Image (cartoon, rainbow, N blue to C red; front, side, top):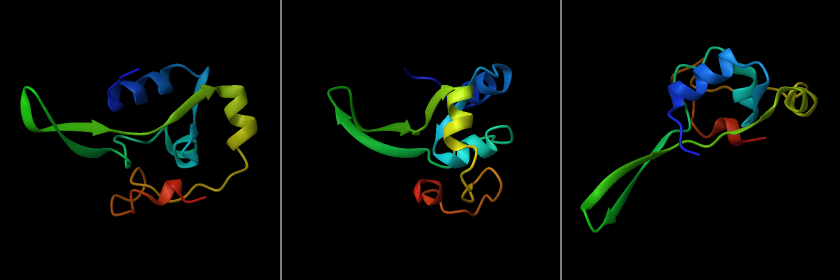
Length: 94
């Protein structure tokens, strides 16, 4: 499924039935995230364009009860939601 990051964050704030599971940092900070620390740009060449820019972000979302049991006792790594200078890969280091 393709969803923009602001739309996904709005959905998670409005719908308490779902929460981020991974990266663990998203579970802990998704209520204050305004962007995504893990959004990367990749360049793709295809029949219509050379060096077309594609943006990707990785997040696993699941049922809130399951997420609470799985992630609640983890320690959040620093991320750009709370420190803009944070290493964007830090949330994946567990």
